[in-house]
Image (tube, rainbow, N blue to C red; front, side):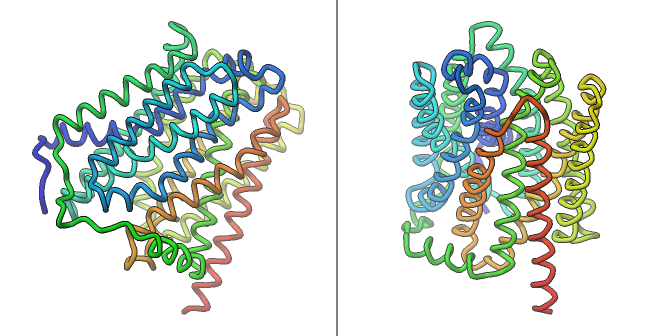
Length: 402
């Protein structure tokens, strides 16, 4: 086991900043969506949600390739190339005069952002192992959880000061600082003798094997449903606060509170998963969310005034984010468990396919927004019901195997 020449606090801070690229790139945009809709797509304001999903689709596509590329070429060159692409796309987005150009820039920005996120994990794996690696990742993720909470606030402050285009300037500054920090302080973590050539046939074979394995394919589809639920919530929630509850000004503060509450899910999951198991815990979480989503749907349809529904909606939003902490990690572990012989390839394929499927499913649900919470609550209930059915099918597969 090698170690980073950086002190442990600096190494953890650097990795957390690299991990945070994606969360910052998504969540800081949310307060700017109304202004972007007014300027670039006033005739179809719901289209502005695609600023979130286009970034996610680009990131999902790149995730399929970034891991194997870094295994073949080294970590630094892939990470720094991804950051350069991210910065270039941010410049284009900053200067975009049409909504279509902004969406293209966001797709490319997502492709670039996959580099820092995926390669940061690989760097930790290169330099540390066992309990030390688990400890470092826990500390990195603890630091990382602050980003989704603070990003909308930062985005709102930037917009108030300089307008929505300045958010992309903040992305450029963020990426440049992270890249320079890594380039100047963290040497290459994968020696040339440990690199492996990129083989497309192995990637296709890994994907084929995963599709044929019933437990893996069911876990991958359930994970895609979970990502769909998350992306629908993130892309639609600002409109709900603004147009349904007339709380657009306070949205960043409520989002921060909800994110901090949801961050505790990982602590609960670590406690419960040893007792209940991954599949059972994920099944329970999906089933509970179906009940909660149908309950808030029924309350809204009972014509309760929006002012009285606001607190209920915030609690439900927290439950959705909290549920992802009880499902995504467990589903990823279930899918990875039978794929240990191709773990690296499997990690890229699972991350890529589940992200892309989730984002594509989220787009039509988000575009159905009609000035009420019903498209959001019914969409989440439907997606979780499908995931719950997949988990029951997984249980039947396990019983047959036993």
